[in-house]
Length: 216
Length: 263
Image 1 (cartoon, rainbow over the protein chains, first blue to last red):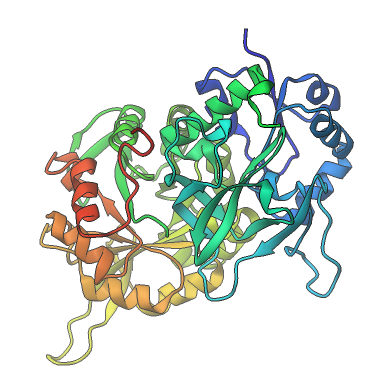
Image 2: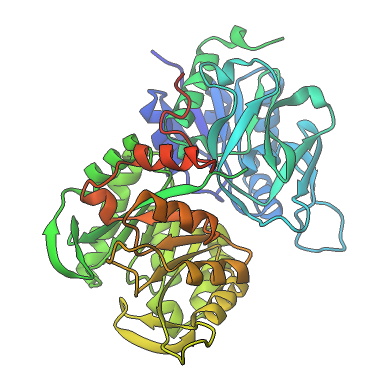
């Protein structure tokens, strides 16, 4: 019996697609905003769309920040998707008050969320190549340069380049996936990336089933 | 670099896919969920469902079609046809659509684009523009007029000006159909495409007129389109998505291979 996956419902994303995709790859997913359910799951998927500050506010309001950080600290396989990846970082350039301080994220990964430079069409929407920076079980069976589906205006910049799992070229290379032990994150939408996306989610299921697959 | 997208368009009437020419001679072409799954397997980069029912019952049926499709296919899904309120957009997105395409309702009420983009993000909002060439004296620069109601009513609006306006209102993409070229299979109106694509920073999806693979290539190169909407050349089996993508790849255009990750 595969172990359960908590899909974190922060209230800002349509979770149907990711839920259906996890079910499609035979992962018993449960959509939840209950800290106890998240704490009891074998793995966590943390999706998100919309604005950084708004989403972070909802997470705090629901009292979910501490349980998410606990799951990460305890070594539970954790996958942030799109804004969910960005929320793992210290802060973001995406703010409602242009003169104010940068909004703070969960701070599980050192680094910043940056806006694409002027001159590039944003949002970056469509299929783009993802090139793994190193071998990792999340990308098992996926060729370097496989296309995944993106839709975002900001990208993550980890302070430690060693945390970069994959890069994508949009004007310049940006980090499209990260891996810090059990903490994984992808900027693209695996649930909208056809067979390649389903393969990645299935790989995440394999990691949940056997966390020793993860590099130390 | 972003891949050029191949987007099959499925006309849906009363919960069934139909094919025909401009709303006439409609023939049943199967179950939308099955057709969507077929094109997904074939390598479509995205799908468009166009509801041509435009009635209250049609709306409920469309929501059900979207719900079922989104449960079984895992590529972006856009829905258009008779969408005239932010609430209905929300219902479709909640049912599993990723993008909403607006046309006639946005011409009557441009705030629909702004409100939809503010609530769901620009990436969700596609504006469809149906344009027809305006006859002018020989030698004068071409102009195109926007039509509403499925191409039946002239609006007096200039297509380029409207494209610029919808981008400013927050549209994330423009789905541009040449009414002159649509259904002819003689090729896209490349001048229209290039004029709109040159006027806005957002992606333009080319529609109307494709008959050969070369036409698709022209739309994506000279026409500067980011994507091509394909209907009849797929539905009537003239070409498969794999044939289209192989042809474009040979021309040096970036496309997502049909066998994307499989070695």
